[in-house]
Image (cartoon, rainbow, N blue to C red):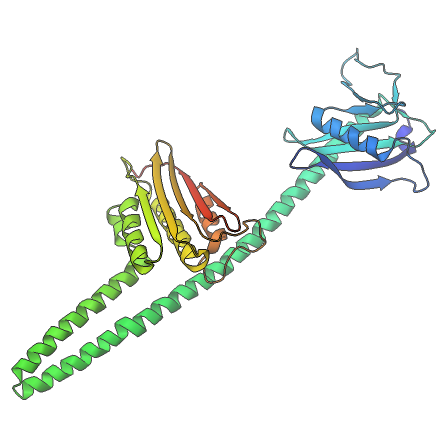
Length: 368
């Protein structure tokens, strides 16, 4: 093994961008006073060549970049083993995916790299690729933990908000009607005591209407918590009923629904997820979108169930750092997490002034 690594001027780690180009992530210099033999632009070009080709490249004395098809196990090498290079670039590969390149440059007018140096540099690159992959995975785990913590916070907030809403509806509407019923029954008792049968009969009629209103309000509360149609008849009828109630509640918005019914019902948890996503998406439209047209589309393919909720509202930027709007239940993050938990995908397409489209796709597993 030649000792040219000891004379190395510097090395650079280049990471691959989403568009395939590379950028310098970190530069290491053994001696700040050393002058590297290859200009930085050529080193970046070598890194790009290594990433594009997936093999080791060398920069010659004329700054030309050559692909080095070098295998230390082979006796006959494509390149002359006496060839030397001012710089070497090795792709950083993890799980058959190219993440970037490690490039090392020699010192100007010092001993250049030779073919046997490829073994050591390749070993460095393998270790470096493993380190980078571990760092990326750690970052993903950290981001996931942050999202999970935020989701738990939103879940608790949504639960408390839902409890407050139910308590308020029961107190303001049903509770008042039950109080009126009790007072009405007391009035009937008084009129019967005075033989005012006509007045008692009218009170009974009024109280019957009042009790029917209280029953309807209780059914609405129960339907919001868990629609009976979803369990009894399935997703399509439950969506149709909810959209009808939604349209009556928001007459300023025109809502259309197209929902086919599968030959066999989905798993209950799948139907629940699709219904809750549609419910959440429609709630967000009513609260934030300022839309006039809403479309709900439910389709069943042989291997896929697809839900699409779109509107012509003001839209938003999906890449904004915080899209979990306060007061919107579990928000967009909650919808995506809910779908992911059952093995599906949730795609949210929007732009300012261009409306919003929520697309959910779940693999079909029929209910046995």
